Image (cartoon, rainbow, N blue to C red; front, side, top):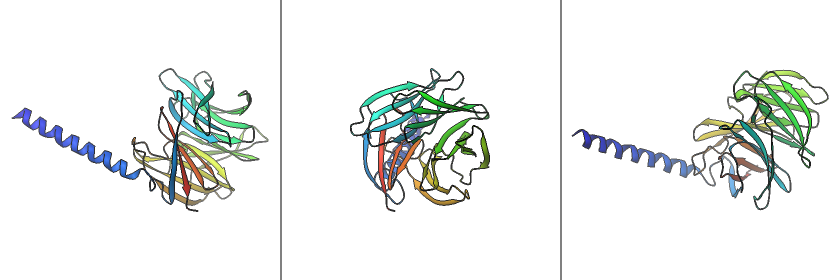
Length: 264
């Protein structure tokens, strides 16, 4: 009798899991991002660990990942057309081995490298895209998990981006620290047309992408995001926006870069 009940419970659990998987699968595809169409997914060849941030230019894709088991962090470079692995550089800095969301600006990539705990420490690194050498370091007495950069300004989010550190790039210390006006725990952020665009998860299978006016720090727009067919929220980790073209990477290796086209 007990075994029969256990078998019945097991069947019920299996059906529940199948239902949840089906629900996740239904969210993936063209309607997985609100007001956006899925254009395709590019498989990234080469070893990636727990993915964090992404940005790209006309030729290359840049991805950060953290090897939590061995306490090491990396910046990876891939070919934008084929997804072929090109090279990587280790970013580990003592107890700081967690690289976060990144931002490409000119010939520089800005990467926060932090301890893997809240209220800790981080260093913002400006890395040359050609040589992969560090150009500049800014030390901050807090965990920083993502960064957005413009011509004169840099904004970095701390643990779950509850606070946003605003820097003048001509100096080395934050000029302001403000609460995040969004409830979304940003994992990656970018400056786009005078607005701060941030993305992050809300549940295991959903998240949002938010636009914030960079001057007033008031929310402007929000898009809801679903999950991939591997049950990873599209907006859970790396995000970059080029015009209406939205690129997301949320799956640990083997990873895919998803390309969406926004309606407007």
